[in-house]
Amino acid sequence: MDSRKPSTPDPSVDSLLVSIREEIGAVTGSSMVGLYLFGSLVAGDFDRSVSDIDLIAVLASGPGKQQAARLARMHRDLAEANPSMSSRRDGSGSSTGTRPAKMG
Image (cartoon, rainbow, N blue to C red; front, side, top):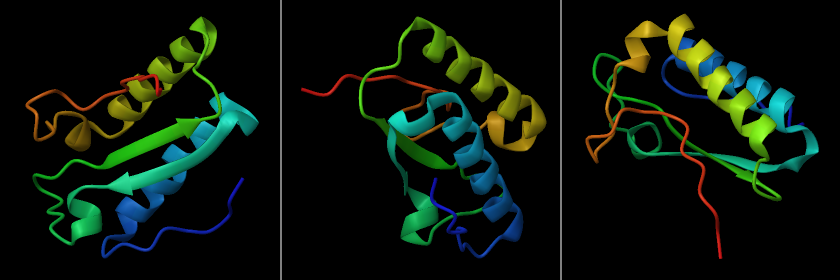
């Protein structure tokens, strides 16, 4: 797993990003191809009081039922541990969350 540390203007966000990467890596193992940050944090418009953190985890193949359940549980645990971030909504009006998608 990549040991580089994120560098944002907010050290608590850096810490959260490291935790998220480690948690996703623990669930997905070597099938995680990449973890990509996008949205306001990348664009420089992040406001800790209102912004969410947008990430896309890319896996070599779709998660099976057990792995999907573990990812959903991981997301719930992170939301409970970070209640100020878990109530945020993305630009589409959807609650932030784990949304598996198939490519191709």
